[in-house]
Amino acid sequence: MLRLKILASVIPLAIVALFARGEFLAGPRPCIELSGTSVQIAALSWQAHRHVSFTSDPGRATVRVQITDNAEAADFTVIDDIDTAEAGACASNAPPLLVAISRNPSGSDPVIYLSRDGPADHRIFVSSKSFSLLDAAALIVGARGERHRIEAASL
Image 1: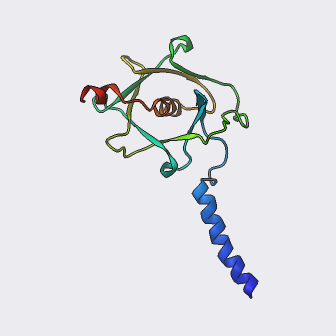
Image 2: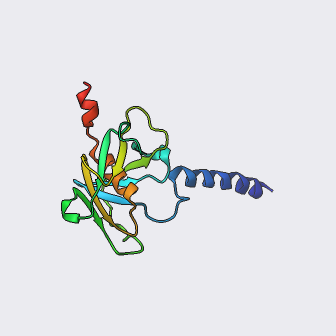
Image 3: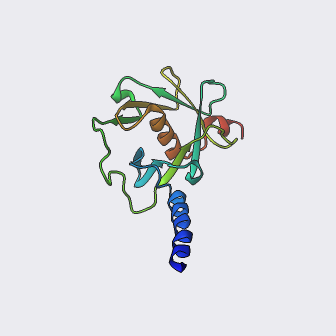
């Protein structure tokens, strides 16, 4: 009987531990390495170090990201033709910087306007089976971490 009680108390703790680590989402998440730091899309929003959001209104945007059709014209290019990510492709000695795409941004979070027209703060080219345009834009803006031009102008 004691074994059953111990087992009954351990199972919920194991489930909570797995949930806290975000292991319920299987498979690798989009990531990049920038200056020796791995930047990755967070499995769970509350785990993220940085949050970004997207808007369809250019007036609300703090960062503009242009989608280009030419890899040479892009600041950030993702090209792959694989169905699954290579294990350890984004591994580093330090824990990754996690970026989450938020639906309800705070006032300090970057708000990205993604379009095919300029002007733009960043230009991206994506031809990938594992990265979406949103993933690429979120990673490049989340990785930068600098103050945005619109915010800096108001100082």
